[in-house]
Length: 395
Picture 1 (cartoon, rainbow, N blue to C red):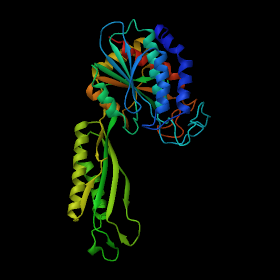
Picture 2: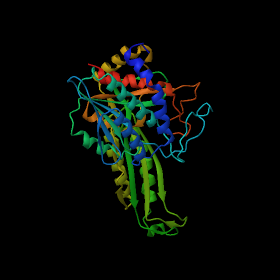
Picture 3: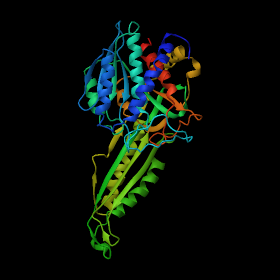
């Protein structure tokens, strides 16, 4: 990093951030249950003397008011953990520096780092508030993993005028010490499928006297594969995975219902909607052709939009990060097929999602997200603060 006031101050925050990250990591809370996490966040916000708003549930919006008028900007961090049992060693077999103390729960996606970096950024912006223009809205979002807090946050943000937004996600495939900010699609949108085929139960010896719902479900699955090949525009990407098929309980009893659930990922909104519509139609038509009924579950929907970075904001923030931290800190990462509620922010406001690299082979960080061996390189947190500050302070 370049030796200047911002990078020096960010580096001075490292002991604080290590302490906070390990505190969050040791006590993870699942989506919608982040009550103790919120208490910790409130304590830190109050120490900074900032105003804040508590949302229904566990979300928070804190406010940093700049000394000068200017653009109002938003910073976002997610606060929930996963129902994953953490392993004591990481990808290289090294003992982790901190472990979850809650059985069956851990921050296996990096949200502990996201919260910590945002707190560090708030400290830095408060310290340099004479340079800050406009108001910075610091959002701590409830339940990103299950999407249970995004609607509450979006509704609350309608009360404020926001010009631009910024989010950050640690990334296991990007080298530690690098930050990636690129225009265009960065994370995938998500399709959710939940279909219930309704037939008529009967004895296995007389299928003619029953309506077997398994048959249209199986036919529908085979047709989906063909349709994906032939209907998705060449050069576009939509992935599809049906992962739950439930029907019956006895070998000689034809069940009354069969259920299919799965998900798809997409980067192009038009192609995602096309895939959702034609798969829904395949399910209906297959049920009709075998004389069965079909119901769609509440989860059957276009669940999340893709995360698409604004070109102008991406270019400006990338330059600002390079000016503060040096060109060596700029990395390149492929778009990520995971999904994020942050796409909802970008739907309303131009902005970026930055990837902060955490892969360090010597340390052993680099295991896949949502994995018990997932670990982070804590030394990257000052870079995360600098990148967020570059966004908040850029002209």
